[in-house]
Amino acid sequence: MSLGTVKVPTIEQFGEVAAELGFAFGAADLTAHLEALLPAFEAYNRLDQMTDQLPPVVYPRRPGRRPSPDENPHAAWYVKTEIPGATSGELAGKAIALKDNICLAGVPMMNGASTLEGYVPDIDAAVATRILDAGGTIVGKTVCEYFCFSGGSHTSATGPVHNPRQMGYSAGGSSSGSAAVVAAGEVPMALGGDQGGSIRIPAAFCGIYGMKPTHGLVPYTGVMPIELTLDHIGPMTATVEDNALLLEVLAGPDGLDPRQYGAQPKPYREALGQGSTGLRIAVVEEGFGHAQSLPGVDQIVREAAERFKGLGATVETVSIPMHRTGSAIWLAVAAEGALMQMMRGNGFGFNWQGLYVTSLLDFHSAWPTRAGELSDTLKNTMLLGQYMVTRYRGHYYAKAQNLVRVLRRAYNEVLARCDLLLMPTLPIVATPLPEADAPISQILQRGFEMLANTAQFDCTHHPAMSVPCGKVDGLPVGMMLVAKAFDEEVIYRAAAAFERGVDWQTLEA
Image (cartoon, rainbow, N blue to C red; front, side, top):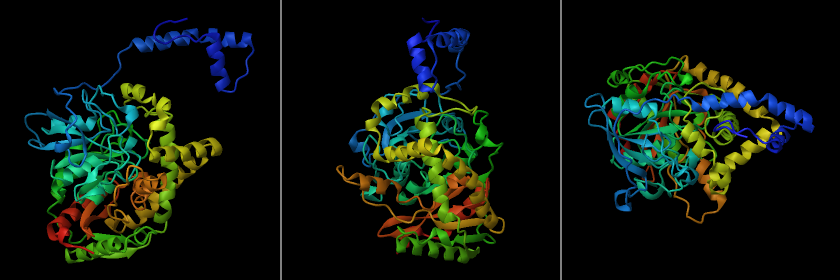
């Protein structure tokens, strides 16, 4: 029996639904429940007939094309296109690339996943609209890792992304293509997403500037979510000035993302010429000396901290013991939260009032029929999440979210007397890409081995930026600067002073 698009189940189908919930109804009771729900199914069909409330698509565009290997030497572009924005604005004359988890109406979006191939968004993400409104030209979508679940650049269904600094080496992930096209000089600016370090990791591996803003400063509307409390989006650029400029355009409430907490944009570029004299920088001891840390990386970053003294800053070493356990807190939030929202919840889940991209939800919902295609890094995360959610009731996700407040307080206690925290962005430099037939153990290692310092700040929501500060074996090293919530200006102030006063490409361990 059907009242419209939403079909009324047969009594047999309804019995299956009851059994899924653990209900054991007799035939008469089951029929009574079904009959009582007939008005509810009518209501769902009235809902189905209403027009979905989606933001309008303003600027004309073309769908673009898959670039040939000759014009895509690092395999970093998914689609190339050209969508001009307004005739004037802060980004006039600037070409910007979007990570391929960002909706751009009429242009294919794959998010690195074979199961999403063929999806074409029907809206522009808020950040895309803001770029176009500011006069920027969107020139394509960049390859990202399979549903963004890797800190390496080897899991995308389109193939590995190569580091422009060294072919055959990882560009970092999950915003791998965005970092690569900026580092290669193909565009001055790109957007990346960050749930465990996915802006800062590829920025560090590729030697560019990557800012994870304060959670909620930039609207996530129209970007494929992973976990509501971890989702960030921000600028990846070749210079500090372009990074600050792009954040000025991106920041501020859009009225559709309830996580924005009333955050307002600021004139970040005004901080660039202020220098670092008088800044108080805290070098976090627990950010160094991880089991996987390269001695050369620790050396280069400590030397970078010392160089801030020559630039007029006060530098001291501090201890934040909880930093070392912060990655465990993040893991529970990321594994269980991503399973329930991104996968079981078909990307968007429930219990919030932001914009749902229903076309994306519908298309993504078919993933269980093709689960074997998912990347090993994603499967590994889902296995952990499924085990913990089903065997431990989500207890550890809940406890981890409670402990996030303690972790945030540990950083804030130091930031109450210092302007910035400083540590290596990553404990390592770019690693060789795994071979096509690499064992699962290596695929997983290369996907997760670099998260020791980045993931915590996705939980605590502090702004954090990777700044190139030297090289080890010819490969870039990133220095991470972390500030109080919504204090991106002080990060830009310090990063600009370092960029101006230090030629990082001449410093090598």
